[in-house]
Length: 120
Image 1: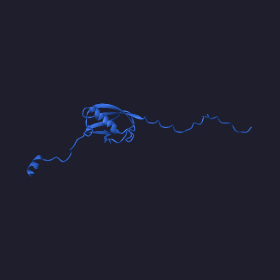
Image 2 (image 1 turned 180 degrees about the vertical axis):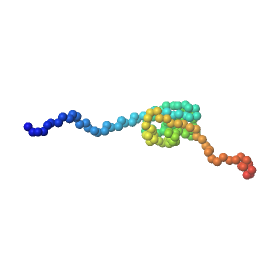
Image 3 (image 1 turned 90 degrees about the vertical axis):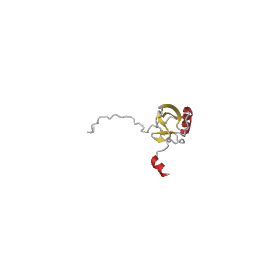
Image 4 (image 1 turned 30 degrees about the horizontal axis):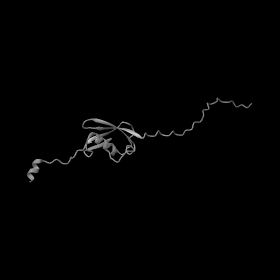
């Protein structure tokens, strides 16, 4: 016999393939809430991730009987382009909210009425 003392046997675990599991694919549809800020009404929509927002905007305006040119649609404070899709702006979760706000004109320099009248 040789003078080598056998050491404790280590637990031999089967080698597991360390490949990453594929990411769960995004569902093909997403649920979006559209909230009109002037009256706090909400409408829920379910659309395809590849559908342009123009379809959602048209459906919402028709339902509410409003002109789509007088309202602005915002997501995370940024104006939506009707040609964009939920995938384009990386909408992730169901229940994301689009805000609808009345278009406001103006914001220019205020005129002094007295000064305008005297100039003529």
